[in-house]
Image (cartoon, rainbow, N blue to C red; front, side):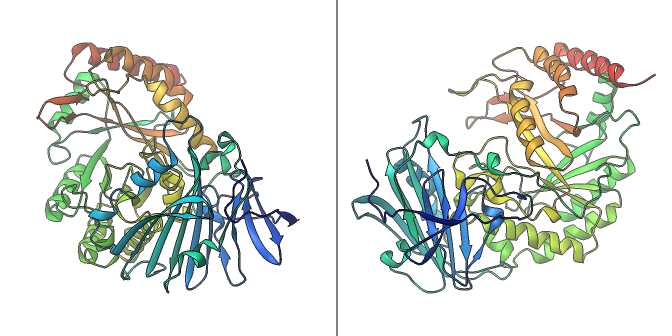
Length: 509
């Protein structure tokens, strides 16, 4: 069946070589073309594209996710979406992508409409938004068009402008041809042709005290640490190993004075802190991205930067981790699918740290292992800050066990083999497993730990890994995912023996 919306025959004039940070070669799926005197940028995999007027700039760094062009008064993004496994319809994708818009107070004059345009079903949602003090580019009017090209395939067209546009004018920038097999649409990661790197960063080790044998450093999340390190010391004695890295979370409801005390305890005990700032208050789903970019927390962020500066030793600074997970209020699901606001937030906080002299912060970009929802607009590369503001990439993965229906038991290798393989091709940064663990429900946790040590040699770029030694609780207060390492003697023995053999195999006599 031929697609009827704004159909045309592509006359290819030239294929232009594109180069941006991390994208040195032109992905073969993109080309520039000319039709009836109009310039077009075309996605060959989705067989759709954008009219590319003069005076617009082309965002090369957005290419893995979709097409993006901007002028001073207009921004246009085209993001193809397909479900070749037919696990989800395109219409469901449209509804879930906009499911939180009604709950977002910053979205003004919110309007939704289902329309038919040239026989094609489209879900249109629009809103207005006030300017934020620290955002890079502000557009007042926002229109999102979910163009259904088939039951399991379509395009998301996002128009942001300083003046209102009619539906006809907005759709005049969009072109599409025949529907193609959705399975040929590559993942955004597969579209990157050169590893993403920080050209300003030297290739020295991220951490100052890696041993001469280059064994990765161990770390621990213990709820009482680093305020109290007694449990950490006890575990180190029991396992005959050290955990020089300590994971500490903070948010805007935290006491910065207490944080300063905690970091002081860590420093006096010669620990390196992985400090995770989640820009929210008490994990509410009302996104604080708007407040951060409007200056509400500027004073607190500057105080935080000074605390980090005073730490002296490198601080692994993990900002808004797992942003591609819908359980985080800094997922773009909660602020109009504007992933650029995540990047602006990163840039603003990074700027504050530089201005306050906190150059000892090591900035860790840390997506979740899988995107939830698993949509292209929510892919980790849509959130990627400037690579010049990244020092390391974090890997996060959990064997959640089988407490909840639909969960499956996964080995360490099943979790981290695919993540490592993807990141190894995608990023030229040091890697950290910033948090991981295994539940005790649904399988043999001692064997899981043994499998971990068997497979660690397969990940030579991992400089550290941090065990999350706590639990997730269900709504009725039951322990749903017991991630503890120190509650089962068999698990502790497996860790002790696995670590002993792992170290022996890697230390040169």
